[in-house]
Length: 119
Image 1: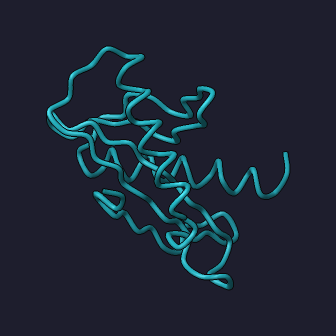
Image 2: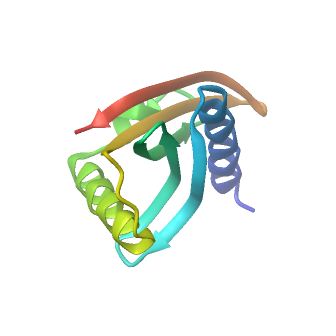
């Protein structure tokens, strides 16, 4: 496994643990369709949460959260609609969160969870 892939996988594990510790219920992970991939789908009360995880090994090129471009945000909105339609659920609300993680030597140095990061 490439180091970048291992870093990303480690970050997704940390993000999942973080979300669970915040009371969210994880429904799906790494869900894929022809539009792309959703890292984590969770529920917080009656709100469906689509969560994008960005993991970096340093802040040399900025915060992991800065990696969310307008195109990525638009793709996440389409993916949220697609997940809902394919799973036949009717949430009262859909929220898109981003979890940014900076890791080094197998340890999370920073975990930042932004609820409703993408409107």
